[in-house]
Image 1 (spheres, rainbow, N blue to C red):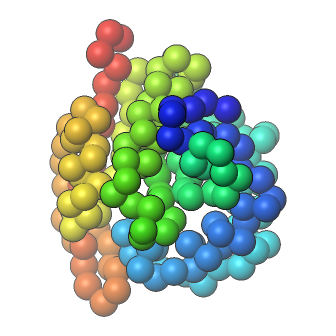
Image 2: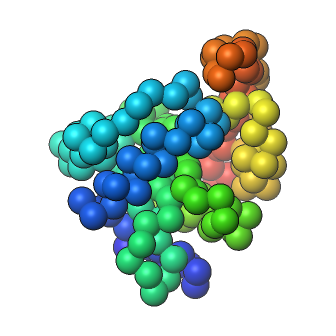
Length: 172
């Protein structure tokens, strides 16, 4: 487990599946990441708990210090050990827990993990261009905009742009 004073990143556990399923089945949450698709516990279990043999992804549950309840997750995916790169994703599940600094701290821990434990050089992410809060967070963490995929996804009845961002290790 890795942590700050406020949060800890640790494993996703079977007890976390109902929360993960609820967040993934909420169109308001999923529209920030992808088109809505109905979810179920089996699909969630297959995705979150079967990553052990897949060296191209690492998942972390985000928990507040002193609490066992999951408040979000960080995904490190497409880990490429040859090119030393990966893509990141994050979600703070409940609206009332957003804007509290948990996402910023979780992303910083994930970035540090990628640099120190995975020996990566480049991290990338995709974010819907209308998600200005996320873009501001990523810029604060040092990510730079590399481009925009115009009208790349059809979400909630309309086309949305995807902003591509990346962060390079400052010393590599």
